[in-house]
Image (cartoon, rainbow, N blue to C red):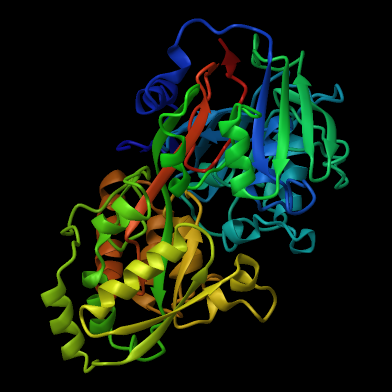
Length: 514
């Protein structure tokens, strides 16, 4: 998406038409019809549905029916105004001003104002709130940095310049749903937002029901009368519900399940590019990965196309060991695409003095991680590096407190949901003090480049910084990004106007039934 930054602000553009082209124009199959009920399946929320603390797909999808963001990220990575109609920054990208949409009503009849937005973001950046958005805002937005200029204008004064700030208050930062100033944390029982649907019921481990918001700000929408969610306990039960017609679509699905659905009568699958991935990291402070050549050997040994064809059913695109995904504003143009080169990998491993060692590769028992790990094991055996697999339950792999294997083991594979901007990977994963720095990588030069990238508004300068950052990560290889996955959304052929989403966003405001 060249041209994302202009005049200190982000272009609004005709993002909807571009997204429709990517998705095969599902929203253009005839004129929308009013009425009807859509049935949605999702894995049951694992915790209370609270926009401040939620982190799982089920909770997020439920909350997104009732509440909305200032900005929405389209399927192609562009930005679309929602509760904010426009935004701009000062020359330094340190102060951002957002104009709010007029005459927007919360479900309780009160009018959205800047006070609600200020309270929402004060809550999210307060360390005491246990907000799941704290990581994205770390070092960027702090308590006291959000101001009501007037009733319809909000200014964010940042701790450090950040040219992509609108993405941090968008749907890609899913906790930033705007809530009333008086919110007290009881969203699951009494959700009050500005969204297209109003919650009627929520039953733990069973489901939730919603009815159309008759006072929705987007005149004429939503088209549906009702939305009913069914909660499933596992992916297999959800898959059977979709195949049997119990639900019309699902919030998330694994790529490995898509072949089972393709060709099923009454169903179709929409695909969209995206910036989700499972990364393979190597701790740079543990042998044999203290030597950069050993890490490079692993990168050259992996069969990326084979991984995509087998574990991902051909639904992904190759990665090149940097964090500038295919839907992000800038992409490096100075690197050759890595493909499997076993002779080069063997030579690098030999030069690093590594031969016959055994390393343990740890990951979670969630597709496609086990298949990815097996492929890595087989590929590295071909260059003389032995791999033992340690496949853990998801809860044990991520752990909690001081016991979080995914941040400590020397060699591992971890799941990353789609991100809209590289900073959402670079800052937590590769900065020296990054909170999710699994490779324990420290590079002051890279730290400086990341800060400069985040603070830079100009196109040419950002492209140059993109190239410099990607060159370092490509050569140092603390993390291997072997592929970029998009989003797959299976749905009934009678369901129209619903996009696929790389971030699993379930936007039913434009959905309708034939």
